[in-house]
Image 1 (tube, rainbow, N blue to C red):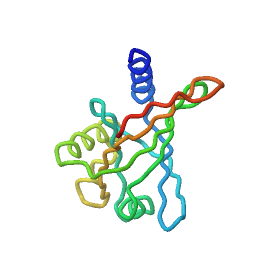
Image 2: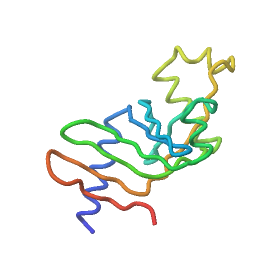
Image 3: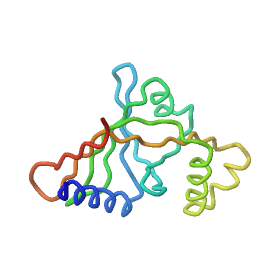
Image 4: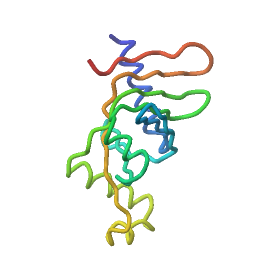
Length: 141
């Protein structure tokens, strides 16, 4: 049990130390990879995208995703799914986003920038540090 807790602490440390992920989605057997920002709110991971974008359309058809965070020597690969964030979480996400990017305020408030906010529901984490096999952390059922 202690080893699992240590892995989870390292997992959260890497997530909190970064802001950018490579998100992979797919639809109709066609994969799509996107570099994008994410926001940690507590121990939950959120991202926003235009619902009409390729990844937005992919997630509407198939919520399964895979993503990577970090870089050598320590990085994470996560498998899971995207669920639409609730109103409170979406507001918290937008607050953090605007703190990071005040230039987005006019676009969001005018409706020119439409964001659908997703929460990442993690199933499995693959923690890699240095060379060698990834440590597997099963989060979901």
